[in-house]
Picture 1 (cartoon, rainbow, N blue to C red):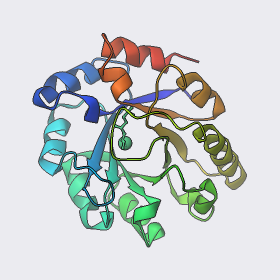
Picture 2 (cartoon, rainbow, N blue to C red):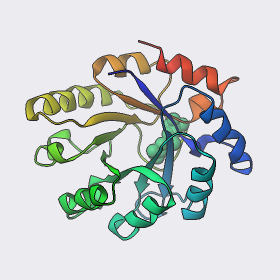
Picture 3 (tube, protein in one colour):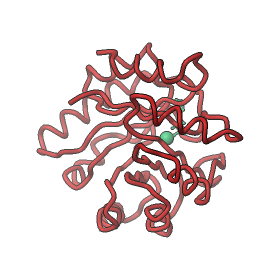
Picture 4 (spheres, rainbow, N blue to C red):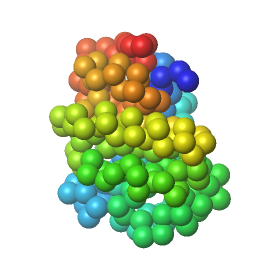
Length: 217
Ligand code: DX5
Ligand code: ZN
């Protein structure tokens, strides 16, 4: 599978979101990663539904919405209506994960499950065949611009193995601290999609950086 890149809009200039979206539209990016934080599941608040709708109005790439919120079931259909094509919930925030994943698929979205850095991949054993995407957090969720956690490579290996063993079609997405220093190694280990926030938006030419990340292998 070709390496896919999802620039994280969290790192963009929120006073000039349209420019950021146009940059992503005309780049080689595959998705726009949209981080939703509720100040409860994570110690930060990011953006809400009207902003997702506004992003969707301008976006030519699918919205990969990462819900870092408690009780995500309450908001799934709202985010689907706001324009999400992928909806990813945290395993740690779902008591009835199977039901939540089914709910996402019933809305016509791709269903993703995210794991915090401390959550073992083996907890996905009995759900992996149902999910379209597993997002491995490679930093503790809540903020952009943090340092990549090296234990992620081990988790990518374990997850790749689980996917092969179970015949799952799930894709592996890595989120947090992605840069040219780890992108090649992550793709080689079996990652399919890399989220990149600060590394893209703080670079001189974000579109060029997206291209470089995508073509690293
Ligand atoms: C962190 C978010 C990430 C963040 C990544 O909680 O889930 O998507 O935007 O940003 P960088 O690439 O700067 O670590
Ligand atoms: Zn994210």
